[in-house]
Length: 331
Image (cartoon, rainbow, N blue to C red; front, side, top):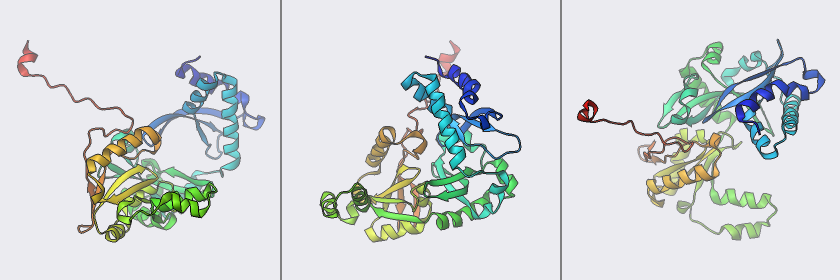
């Protein structure tokens, strides 16, 4: 079996051999793509003067290759994905991204520690242990949301500085993707009903849990990048007033956060649960933080409630620098 680096070179060389005839005149381009929490090796097809190509990831191809140990099958499968992407995703030009972008720029929040390299290339502002970055929505339909990150270069072409991006995104994010606050009871009931469970049985399965003892899911109408709604204080305040207590906010993923009454437990215990769930049940590219946040309903302010040492999201623990005694160094 080939190692990853050799596999990457072979894929780049052979990819067009398995593509339909109309794509054979294109150039195969491979380059690192900085995604949320990770960097992947992207593969795209470039044709001079044409629209931006979809990108697939060689890392995913290699996982499939490791499972099936069949190079041809792996490349053919990746080509099918690329062709389908070209057919289904609307063609995107730079001009279409720039047009009316100020009406379509929105927030995204990511972990600062895990994305230091990524943040060097994009306009952003820090918020606790997170950073607010920006995306331009290109297309939205029943299949999801197509968007592109706002890099320093794109911001320059848009003629917008970070302050202007923030102001536009603050309005657009709420308008395009309205915040939602739902009890976990309701979320679970909907899941049961979608699976075909009769409503009476679904309600019996869930039972009655008082509001102050339940989890509350904060997201948006699409359920995509909905964790940004922890930035909107009005929803937090209304929930805290309804429960009659401060809140602890648990970062479930980049798509949603969970809120509980501050009387439900200590933040340190809740943080242990967050870390465990992150490492066992949340994909790396969807993890947001290992910390817990505290919302003070009287001060109407959100702050960090914990400062756990495992700030990275990939399980890598930074080793403290070695400190040498001056006498030891002189020996």
